Length: 306
Image 1 (cartoon, rainbow, N blue to C red):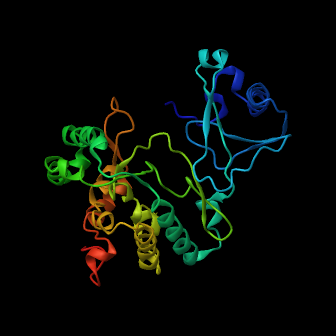
Image 2 (cartoon, one colour):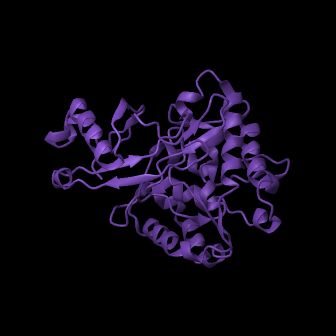
């Protein structure tokens, strides 16, 4: 997937904002049968696309209450021959977490963390995770085979997960977001989640493996270092409390595994043909993250052992 740094990275037919708006109007009229009342450029923009918010003249049904937008591919052979593809995504109300949290302080992060926990409490798919094992095995094997120097200290732990992979099949299969972060979570003025976007690389994972981002849901990176705010523990415990409170099955609540998810989040492989990569900032924090224990497992002990 080629990086889009500027409009000039698009084919000639789409290499200006005016051309993109004109094409958006044309495609909406063709596929939705409605003229466009208004077109706005979404902020922030993605790294691999240009997104426009189209308000239809016939006022389509609201997407309120739907946390995951519907996305449809609009086939256009002329554009595809030039190397451009068009998708229509249902607009969800709210601002990105990054934008909406401004001026809310630490309390805003606490509220968002709790709301994210409530959302994922509804993520049960199946009673076991057998169907997810081939993908996880392939990713772990790619990590073991990788010559990446940053990954070498963690290979014994990765191998342990690989050797015990069948145990993960016993965990419930759960909705997982590949890149849960401050630009993919939408929130309202009260910091409650209104939507989750950017699902294209996401696949279901064993319960808990999908929550490796808990560190940066409650905390953040600043200046290349992992930082915990004064109310970090309140945000982190709030996430788990709301998640587990929303799961009625006690057996499911006990069958949690967060540690492997932390590794999968750090060493990424977006395509089986691509090499394993990582962020230097994330690798720096990984030894600390791997000592993490969730609240009901650690009791009153520290959340990180180092």
